[in-house]
Length: 286
Image 1 (cartoon, rainbow, N blue to C red):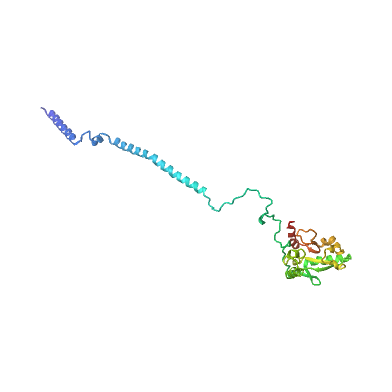
Image 2 (cartoon, helix red, strand yellow):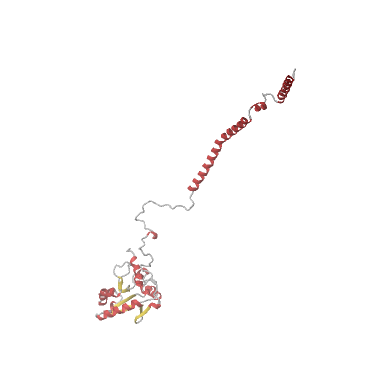
């Protein structure tokens, strides 16, 4: 046997020994470890990945369902918040039943042009300031503007042969108390009856300093009587008083239902007097 053959034999023995050792150290192929060893590492990792994917895929429906439930709760909560009124004040119920015309309305439903601030059909008036009052002769006083115009009117009537005389002018609230309650008691008049010829205190035009009662000096018996309208003084006033800014306060069938007073005139010749008296024209006939 030559040297080359000896080397080959030795190589074969070593190879057989290595194979034998390798077979003894490897487990049987039917074991779980053996099967795992037979699958390449890349495939084994892939299997694990696919398994994870399957698990994750299986969990997706549950996750989506949970998200849907949560979203539904949020939406429902929002709807409830929108539907719940913030202001818990009860909403007034508006009646659609037609009102019975025979049923009287309340004061809040009355027309705004109806003046309810009156007593026995007389309107309230503020008392004229003392500084605004001046004498028109005797003990009678009017406001300055009214006094000047009245004196001019009396002078014009006199030049026409008519003698207008003063019976009453400015009266304070205290004086009106005596006239209304004192004289009313002396005559046995109820307030409703007394109010037909005299205003209650604080409700007299005489408080304003713009009102005046006049008579005819030539026919004194007609003073403060309705037949004063037959005198020359009344007829002249009827034709000329407006020129001087005066008007009759209580003509026949006046809206305030005060007795006809042809002797009672008021000044409406400036803005203050006009505003003072024309509230009376807001009263409705009853």
